[in-house]
Image 1 (tube, rainbow over the protein chains, first blue to last red):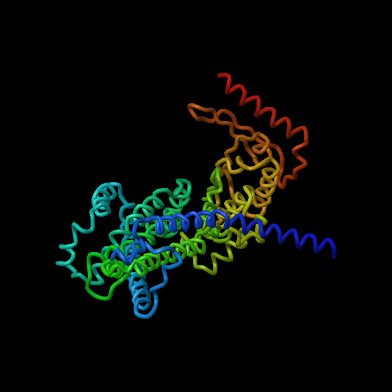
Image 2: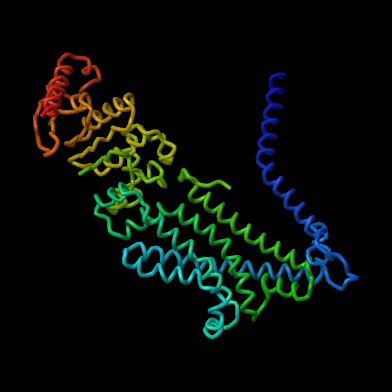
Length: 280
Length: 177
């Protein structure tokens, strides 16, 4: 009995230790971050002087949610939902198109060489340069915002798919060659499974980019219900610093949600067998 | 024809059982048949318990057994072994040699077995062919006098040592040229 108690308290201590080890780092960073935020909010000249006629530029953390009620809160929730929709639709399209392009490019070196420069061009072209073209072609609507999301988030999926397909070990290829396997069986039963850890790695990066895409799309294409990007602009123009920061936080939350979602998917599908699988 | 590589070459995303099924799958055998054949092959190398484990959960010797079962399942008449047990430790290697002899006794096949271990060559073979390097050609052919089934005890018989000695001498001569 005595022994049991002792071992129980020992495991409890072990457990506490693991908790501390796990949350100590993030906790310290959070405290430093909040301290910096307060320093900035209170250090900034005229940050709280209604008398001067200028509104607050940056609210301190505890005053962030002061104005979040009623219509403002509803607006943020709706914008969150719309941006979630835009990024998910965009990400789904980017994943499908990216996978197909990666697979196509993996089939022949000349195809890979032919397409790379244009994909890089697509990745680095500032969206604003093609805004007029897109308004002409698809309008200034949901479709245009989804398109921006696709353009911004597709690159990691293509490059990681291609990299994954190329890095299938040679001895596994030999195994399939001895069975005289065709390219389709090789792709489905060998290359794609072998590439799946790399593809999931790409998906995780793309998930974050898709949120950026949905918000950037809002800046340029204004028709339809406002997403988080458009709402941030509105709050900015109305000098509503609190709601603006909260909307930005909502965007962070959206990105985090997608990142964790794909992390979990990755763990479920690839984690069972892949030795290098990244934990949460 | 069966082929066993130098390394196990298992597909890491498939369980042991699904790995053994791979070749049958590529040959278009239906799911129920291939599952049964694969399970039997896996049992014959003593891994029925590990059927649902992934390669990363298996030891080096166990992986090699799965690899062996994967070739076995296609019931080849001729087996080609390319130094299959080179990477496992001595103890596991002797165990695998005995397993191979047991398989050899139960399923009839011919085998060409490439190895750098003299005792492994003598223990397994009816005939040992010594190859010379550059140009690769047959230098000597040595008949091994032991009958099958063989037991691990023959390793300690004088004739066994004599065979090993003969082969070692030939190999030394080849290197001196």
